[in-house]
Amino acid sequence: MSRLFGRAVDGERAIGSIPGTKGGNISLIGALNLDGMVAAMTVPGSTNTEVFLTYVTQVLAPQLWKEAIVVMDNLRVHHAECVKIAIESVGAFVKFLPPYSPDLSP
Image (cartoon, rainbow, N blue to C red; front, side):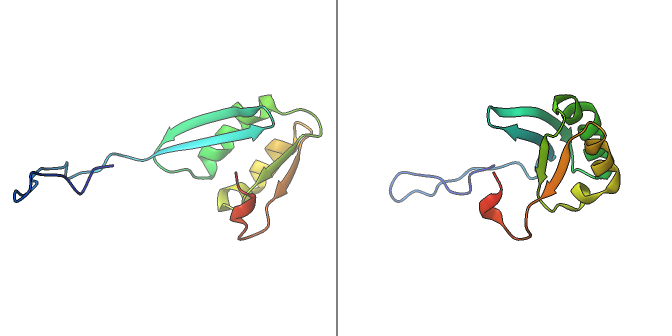
Protein backbone atom coordinates (compact mmCIF):
# COMPACT_ATOMS: atom_id res chain seq x y z
CA MET A 1 0.00 0.00 0.00
CA SER A 2 1.23 3.45 -0.80
CA ARG A 3 0.97 6.35 1.58
CA LEU A 4 -1.26 9.11 0.31
CA PHE A 5 -0.30 11.70 2.93
CA GLY A 6 3.07 13.04 4.05
CA ARG A 7 4.63 15.49 6.49
CA ALA A 8 6.53 18.66 5.78
CA VAL A 9 8.00 21.58 7.66
CA ASP A 10 5.43 24.24 8.60
CA GLY A 11 4.54 26.35 5.59
CA GLU A 12 6.05 23.89 3.08
CA ARG A 13 4.20 21.41 0.91
CA ALA A 14 4.92 17.67 1.16
CA ILE A 15 5.78 16.45 -2.33
CA GLY A 16 6.39 12.86 -3.33
CA SER A 17 5.48 10.29 -5.90
CA ILE A 18 4.04 6.81 -5.79
CA PRO A 19 4.07 4.07 -8.42
CA GLY A 20 1.22 4.39 -10.91
CA THR A 21 0.63 0.66 -11.16
CA LYS A 22 -0.44 -1.66 -8.41
CA GLY A 23 1.13 -5.06 -7.88
CA GLY A 24 -0.67 -8.26 -8.76
CA ASN A 25 -2.95 -10.21 -6.44
CA ILE A 26 -1.77 -13.18 -4.43
CA SER A 27 -4.42 -15.48 -2.97
CA LEU A 28 -3.81 -17.45 0.22
CA ILE A 29 -5.89 -20.58 0.71
CA GLY A 30 -5.58 -22.18 4.11
CA ALA A 31 -7.07 -24.47 6.71
CA LEU A 32 -7.02 -24.08 10.48
CA ASN A 33 -7.48 -26.50 13.32
CA LEU A 34 -7.04 -26.09 17.08
CA ASP A 35 -3.25 -26.16 16.64
CA GLY A 36 -3.23 -23.36 14.05
CA MET A 37 -2.60 -23.33 10.30
CA VAL A 38 -2.29 -26.87 8.94
CA ALA A 39 -2.58 -26.59 5.17
CA ALA A 40 -1.72 -23.45 3.21
CA MET A 41 -1.14 -22.63 -0.43
CA THR A 42 -0.58 -19.35 -2.28
CA VAL A 43 -1.46 -18.73 -5.90
CA PRO A 44 -0.87 -15.68 -8.06
CA GLY A 45 -4.13 -14.01 -9.05
CA SER A 46 -7.62 -15.01 -8.05
CA THR A 47 -9.03 -18.41 -7.13
CA ASN A 48 -11.45 -20.44 -9.21
CA THR A 49 -12.88 -23.94 -8.85
CA GLU A 50 -9.92 -25.56 -10.61
CA VAL A 51 -7.40 -23.88 -8.29
CA PHE A 52 -9.44 -24.68 -5.18
CA LEU A 53 -9.86 -28.32 -6.22
CA THR A 54 -6.08 -28.56 -6.69
CA TYR A 55 -5.64 -27.18 -3.16
CA VAL A 56 -8.14 -29.66 -1.72
CA THR A 57 -6.66 -32.73 -3.44
CA GLN A 58 -2.95 -31.92 -3.10
CA VAL A 59 -2.70 -29.90 0.13
CA LEU A 60 -5.80 -30.31 2.31
CA ALA A 61 -6.83 -33.94 1.76
CA PRO A 62 -3.49 -35.41 2.95
CA GLN A 63 -3.95 -33.49 6.23
CA LEU A 64 -7.47 -34.80 6.87
CA TRP A 65 -8.43 -37.87 8.86
CA LYS A 66 -11.50 -40.07 8.86
CA GLU A 67 -14.54 -38.19 10.23
CA ALA A 68 -12.77 -34.81 10.17
CA ILE A 69 -15.17 -31.92 9.63
CA VAL A 70 -14.27 -29.30 7.01
CA VAL A 71 -16.18 -26.05 7.63
CA MET A 72 -16.26 -23.59 4.74
CA ASP A 73 -17.95 -20.28 4.05
CA ASN A 74 -20.28 -19.79 1.12
CA LEU A 75 -17.81 -18.80 -1.57
CA ARG A 76 -19.11 -20.20 -4.84
CA VAL A 77 -16.05 -22.42 -5.48
CA HIS A 78 -16.55 -24.12 -2.08
CA HIS A 79 -19.93 -25.43 -3.26
CA ALA A 80 -18.59 -27.22 -6.34
CA GLU A 81 -19.60 -30.88 -6.28
CA CYS A 82 -16.07 -31.99 -7.22
CA VAL A 83 -14.71 -30.26 -4.09
CA LYS A 84 -17.24 -32.02 -1.86
CA ILE A 85 -16.42 -35.38 -3.46
CA ALA A 86 -12.67 -34.84 -2.99
CA ILE A 87 -13.11 -34.07 0.72
CA GLU A 88 -15.55 -36.90 1.35
CA SER A 89 -13.30 -39.38 -0.49
CA VAL A 90 -10.88 -39.32 2.47
CA GLY A 91 -13.71 -39.93 4.97
CA ALA A 92 -14.19 -36.31 6.06
CA PHE A 93 -17.45 -34.35 6.23
CA VAL A 94 -18.28 -30.99 4.64
CA LYS A 95 -20.29 -28.34 6.51
CA PHE A 96 -21.05 -24.77 5.44
CA LEU A 97 -21.40 -21.68 7.57
CA PRO A 98 -24.79 -19.97 7.53
CA PRO A 99 -25.04 -17.14 4.98
CA TYR A 100 -24.02 -13.67 6.18
CA SER A 101 -22.25 -14.80 9.35
CA PRO A 102 -18.95 -12.87 9.54
CA ASP A 103 -18.84 -13.51 13.29
CA LEU A 104 -18.25 -17.22 12.58
CA SER A 105 -15.44 -16.74 10.04
CA PRO A 106 -11.92 -16.88 11.50
